Image (cartoon, rainbow, N blue to C red):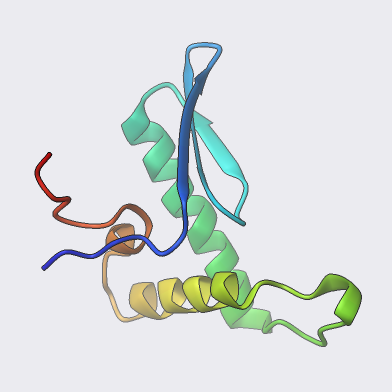
Length: 98
């Protein structure tokens, strides 16, 4: 089964470090791609846990979160809470052969 990430993933190198980010959720840096990927998973898990613990609260027109980002982080949190591995949601799985 092939799963594609629904949000654009950004990868770059700066100062000899790998910078990895998921659109709408900032970025992280690490000395290797694996380290940056692990940090990104941790970063998203912290966001998902905070959302699950406190909810989103009142939403105002001036600060309205993107529904796609809310759906993504909600699904991320549900998957982790159920004991699943969220990496497929971020990075996709079984990428097609090039």
